[in-house]
Length: 255
Ligand code: BGC
Image (spheres, rainbow, N blue to C red):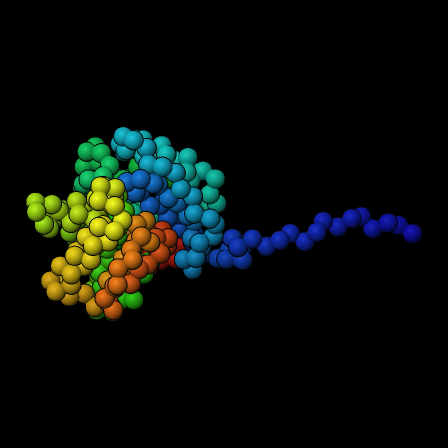
């Protein structure tokens, strides 16, 4: 009796295989303290674990791009790239970067990431990307992010109003909003007082902007222990990557 050759055990289907149709998006979030990346499937779901490395210091475009190159190397394939950047972005060009390096002013980030990945690239302000991961698309919605800086983004019926830099608006005693609730303030005054600062910022914003809903995200949102008004929700920081999917929603499907 001939012996049957041992059969290889059926290969476990990976998430990537089960979502094989449609473009995958590499989402990158450039932050003042960390660079994060994740590949999203054709439906916008994470295909792998998020990867993170520390933002190089000084955070020049060259150093950050080199770090991004290393960060994304082990990730799976992708057909397009979304980047969240912590400053004003116009048509892929970065116009400010308070928490990175002055060399970012006037830097064509979309082109540089395209050179690196050979894929089409969209770049948007980081808070703007974050919002696309959480908004409902109804009425006036606002996103505030609490991290190294203070991010702010506004949406009307799901349409993004770009580059609202509330962070650098004077707030109190010669300080800007960001001076008041950014990482440096948290380090300086401690968690308890910083919570009070965030509370005051929310009280100031509400009657001026009158958003239907405010979403608070960013790495430090988890430190909040104030009673939040009913229209304020804390959201997961992963939205800063998941929101990258929406930057392609008006593009034709590519694969
Ligand atoms: C920048 C914003 C950014 C925020 C969070 C601020 O300093 O001016 O553009 O969204 O930090 O990263």
